[in-house]
Image 1: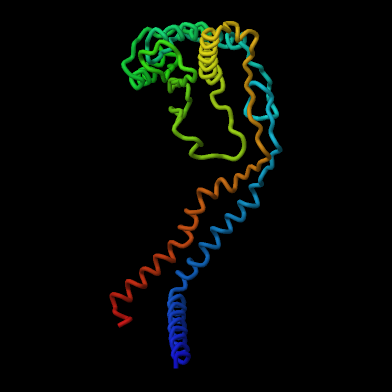
Image 2: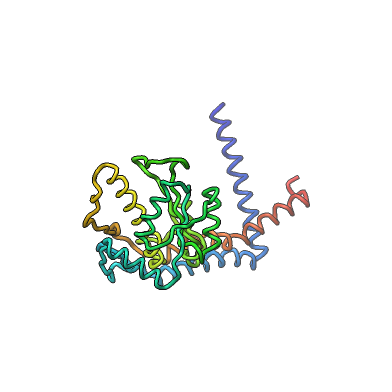
Length: 295
């Protein structure tokens, strides 16, 4: 009996499905123009995707290595450039020759940080700011607004009344927004860009990156190392020490413009392909409810 009941239920469901299919076929036959649109629009849109796939050919790039120093965007046009102390000073002098000598703000301001900033100013050939900022936020806001006055800002994460440096010193470099180019912000809260393209990153705003961030970083590191070395009886710890920058190698990769475009357009294409079909389905259901055809 149970087996017979199951077969009966399955037969009823198959009959219902057959009737539903028959009804939909009748409806499609009654409106040939709509049926043609429902069929041809998805085919046309996906045919365009196939044509684009054939036209946009992917390019394979080999393993990319870089020489020490700053380089152009493409690895094949790399120009090695080692960074030693004299070259850093020359870079700072070149940056100063194109603009007036700007101040470097710092926080907190006490006798210890003032002493460090004097050494940093000698390294970067900039003036330490004489302004005593009430907070780190106020200093960052002032540096961002008065871009023609400040070269940058340095935040030392130490106690405001500290007289000696801890073994591990944490600091941050704040730069004005004007050297961020068209981005208007550094977006340092993001680990990766919003729209990431395959391949190694291009070195945007390279000159500003050279003349500001790396110069301040090298100057702060040199001042901190010399301070710690002098405290431990090794005042000449940085004699003949060169600073060198080398970009990390990038593995073999493929640049496919088609995939980059489709990743943004595919949802829109699917929506356009089936929006008419979905609209007609809703229309038919509403019509059946209004006319009480199922009752």
